[in-house]
Length: 124
Image (cartoon, rainbow, N blue to C red; front, side, top):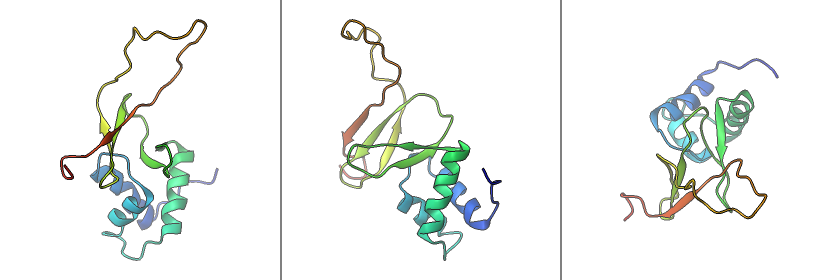
């Protein structure tokens, strides 16, 4: 893998994740990063997001039927809330999977992801 490129564009994209502590869509990243680098192109945003995922500093957050959002890697286990009005995704602390869940015989849970949907406080 080529070495990480330290550019103003890359720094602005990284700062977007430092400012907003929730999963971001590429367009949200672009909007936030353009405050520092007004001429930032979407191709640069997508390239940087892909590089950051490959490097392990970001991870994709997949929602059914939607393009991925991205969040910093290394966060504690958590789930997400997707606002159906503003389309933002928020982190939720804790885990909703109960340890006494009854799986069919022979099944073993290795990972899970739960996304709640509804309206955030700004949209209710």
